[in-house]
Image (cartoon, rainbow, N blue to C red):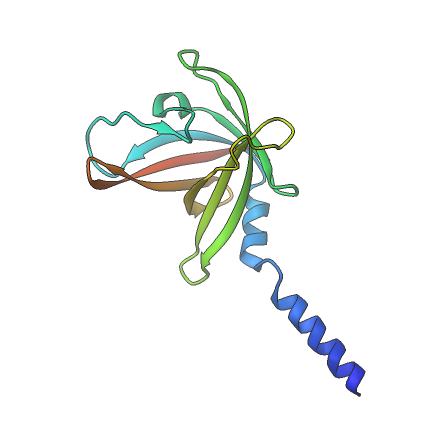
Length: 159
């Protein structure tokens, strides 16, 4: 009887320490190819921003992204001929913030082709919308002493 109790306790503990079901579902939805259709700001005006320490808003619009959730990696390509084009690699993690609201943090860390990061630094973005066809990331930054939210809107292109 004591062995059955201990086995039940261990199984219960292991099950409670797993990845939340909603994160697993999110990884299934995010899998595949996406395109950034639009990047917008919470305030009107012209802002000189460098997104993900890489390129401007104009460069990121129409960039293509592939998410591979089984190993939490991906690749995005800047396609605008007026920018430094080419492939960029990253690792990502989805972390549930609040199951009731559906808010998630999306952690993105730039890497090389082999998955190694030069600085081990990354970006925390809010995954504010995720459906089978649309996704939105939001990041709040300081612009002249006031908060500014940058919204990156994706559409799914291929499954």
